[in-house]
Image (cartoon, rainbow over all chains, first blue to last red; front, side, top):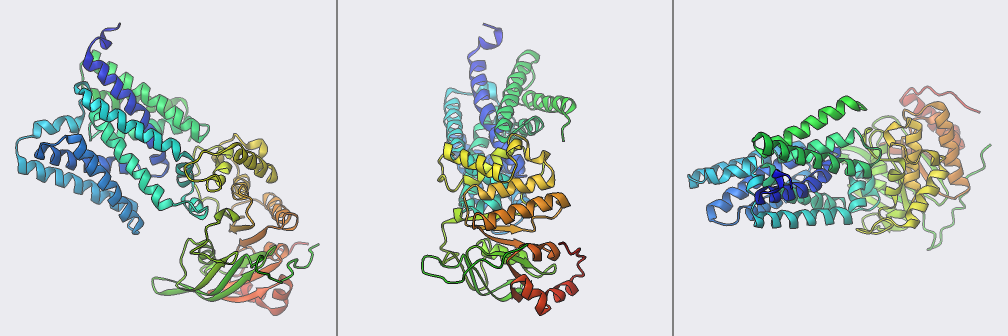
Length: 265
Length: 262
């Protein structure tokens, strides 16, 4: 067995990384094509408020993050369907989530160290409980995307056409944004809140340059993402640099590489 | 040569008109864009809706499709109030090309056309063999079967337009609604496009509603013409429109350049 696989923390890190590496880019392909990439970043910041509240109350931080992210998802969809411009609604939630987190941290004054792993990720510090949470959340997202694949494709390709077909577009939007919220929380332990959207968006953008169909875009995005996560983890282990940063940078490296080789658009 | 309008306008309970608009009005921010529009579209009609920019054509279409709620009046599809109407697979919609989807969208032609079956196959259920067969048939109808594995963004405007028509046809709709379908489509593709519509209307008995600014072509192809300028200026056969001066009035409103075809 190579040295990298001999440590329990590294095995858990790989498992968590692979799980996130599968669901994050799938959501990313839908998000990028709907021009809603900022949603992931927004929900990540909103979930930080949940982490802060969770830490303050001594509750499980990921539970707080999940609750906050889901509430944020509902709020964003309400504002969007209320006619507010998509970007505006996102900007409000992004800064609002961060503001709540900062205030709560200020109130508690002392757990900034506890918050740090959620901001920048601590994949090598993933506990068995976190792994289970990530696994269950990831399975939920994958299942929902599989069941509603054709509906999600329809609202992504042409939302108005989907509405004319009689699809419940409002409900599907809410489902979709909630799935992004769950994905963000699941990815939190791997790359951290500040870099989560990178893991969601970058492999998707890379895949869009290579795709020959929508289905292939999803498959290629997952492949790029896994390559990115494993490459990043290996770099982190052997070069002794933070895993989250190494993962995101290897994703960007892959994107640049693909862009140079396949400058399709 | 065109045959005379083919709908014998006798409606029994089972064969209610496809579309009924009764005193429909609509305003954007207090400005009336549609006023007292009443219009009946019968089975087998090929209705062209024309009018100058800002006449409310697209608004009327969106009201008809249930995307906008009229400020007053009634809209019925197949005899049912549009708010209660649930059989949307009976309605096919071909949006303006370029508005509908992102041109670099990574979807194959076949994926796009199959997505027209989403509703018919049931929420949360995967598409079945019958859905894919229907998609294949629709592609053959519009002559795009050889392109089924191509990326939609790699096709010409005219080809993309035919793919969007196939997507609308895939649920076997009785009513096909088309919004400015020939914008940005070259002359040869337009010819093919109108002969396809002709086929759908005359051979398959589909009811067609086509919004266009291109009066010259449209008045040669349709069986009924509606001239819209906030209110319904004229509704009748194209021949009557020419006689009544309604067409001339429309031309005056927006100095259209029209080459009369024969």
